[in-house]
Structures are given as C-alpha cells and as structure tokens.
Image: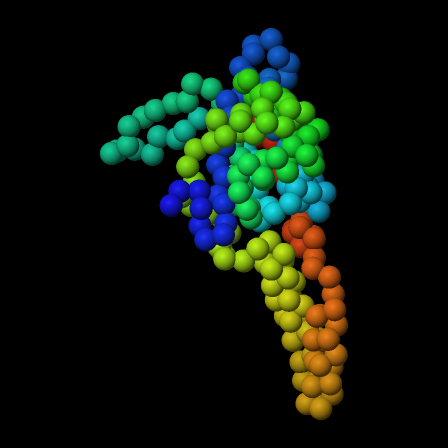
Length: 210
C-alpha cells in the first residue's frame, strides 16, 4: 500500500520552486543556503516536530537521463523535495510541523510556488498534500516500532557495544557484577531525544548558480 508500511507513514513532497529572474540570489540557491545551515541534531526542525524517524530535504534541478530504454525528459521547474518517515497520520504530522516550527517552514517553503505560509494551519496542510506523491520506498528499516521504541533500541545497541569494548578480558565474577549494574542503569535512563545520536555532516549547498 503506498505511503503506509506497518505503523510507519512515508511522505514524499515535491514543491515547485519560484523561478524569478530578478531574484538575487535565485530562490533555489536561497533554499540551498538555508538548508546548509540548518541543524541536523536535536535542534533540527524535524527533531522538534513529534514522530519523525527520518527526514531529508533536497533541491532537485532536473531528472537525469539514464539511457535506453528510458525516455529523455526534463522538469519544467526546480523542485524542493521532502522525504519523511514518521509515526501516525499525515494530517496530524503536517499540523505538528506547522505548530512547532512555522518559522523554519516559511524560511524554506516560502521560496516555493503558491506556498500559503504555516500560520494558516489548514492551508499549510492542504498545500503540502497537494504537492504529495505516493511513497513506495522507505528509509526506516523497522516499520512496526514507534519512534521512542526505535530510539531506545539504538541507544541500547550503542551502550552494549561500548560495554563489551570496555570490559574485554575482565575477570568473570567482576564482569557479571558490572553487567548487572550496567543493565540497571540502562533501564533507568530516559529515552534519548530525536537527533541526539547523529553524526555531524559538512553539507554543501551545490547548485549551478552558487
């Protein structure tokens, strides 16, 4: 079924970017510059909005001709592409974005054709749904666990790997005692927040008119 995989919703949105020859820099370059400075850790707008497993934003200049038997085609404009996997239903998720990060949304989609702004919650939801296409491939590897469950599992995996690495060659009785203490501590720890376990990346803006 398109857009749904287990309890996970896959969202793909293509929003046409304004093509204005008088804009300096161009609208697509302004989006690229803003995205390059956007936080990718727990300060990311998608970490602040509830339920996001993964989200990616990219400016698409055109489609690539890969040769026969494909036909050579080109886009009539550049597009802002959003890919997101999240818990719950579409309207609730889009409404959550509008509620939690309206300024960031306006800074990004404000360069797109007919964008109404996040201040009008329902108009924002309707606009995003009008730009939606079906999703059949998903980034999230697990489709039957909520975001908190997934974050807990990832944290546990990292903690166990660190424990193993730091206790190589330890005498068995002491190892057992420390493992019991480790498990108790792990169970008492709060669930990590979204975006807290990522790897810092150097993001390039790209674009032919940069």
